[in-house]
Amino acid sequence: MMEPDPIDLRPLGLNDLRRERMVRAVLARAQAGAVRTPLGVLAGWARPTLAAAAVVTAISLGTLAWPDAPAPSAPLTIADGLRLPEPAADWIAEDRSPTEADLLESWDP
Image (cartoon, rainbow, N blue to C red; front, top):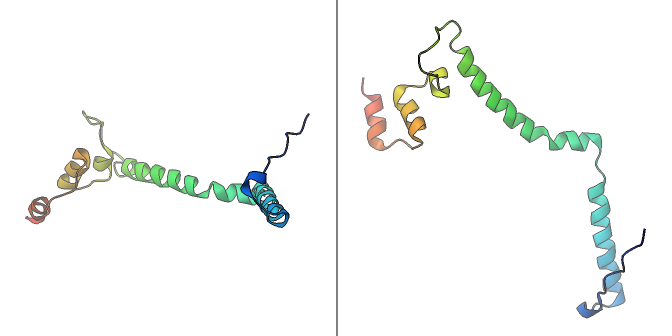
């Protein structure tokens, strides 16, 4: 396998000392990024795993909230499974934030 020709850095106008420092810094960064321990690889998967677990938990809570309910004629939504109040379920279904009027209406008995 042939090695590629080194990059010509002369147009940058660097003296030999600065050029060597720059080359060493780039090589040090490349070598530091290449070292990955098994623990480091596992740590990289921690956040995506926790996010997936949160989604599974939310869906499972909705399913467990209806242990012996008869089969509904219409499919249940996550809001139904989590037993959210009707106004909140509507806001989620409509993908909008509640207005002041919505909040005041939901507090009336």
